[in-house]
Length: 153
Figure 1: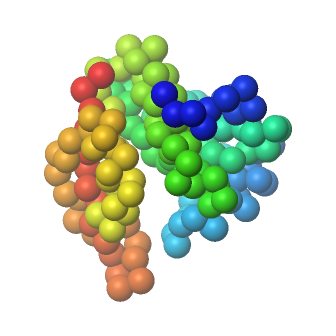
Figure 2: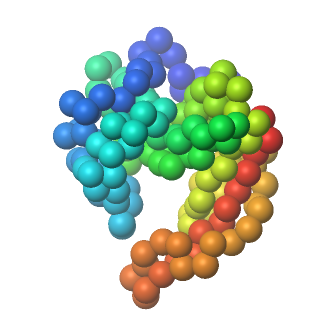
């Protein structure tokens, strides 16, 4: 596993009180960030939502919807100063572990085709491209497609 994860890093379930910090991180890493409502709705819906902590500071977070035997990864984010250190992989490994522990058969996600580093991470973790969702994401020139990826658990 990555040498980055040590005793300073911890996962814990996301709470409503975390949203102030998350709402600072989210627009720093996405041109079209989730809203506070997206996060609070996900929490109130009972989605599996986790934060990655370093010394009591949120440095990453992820949310996943579990339905029947399918896990749908909705958001996987690492604060800008902590990117490119293997923490995205650490978060993804955690979410895959949560999905497996909930006896999910498959995990799905959407990713922008322009997000080359995320696609590389997902492929490295065994995800495969399944389809393209046309016009899925907002973009500067209108809409951007999404690549639908899946992983058999």
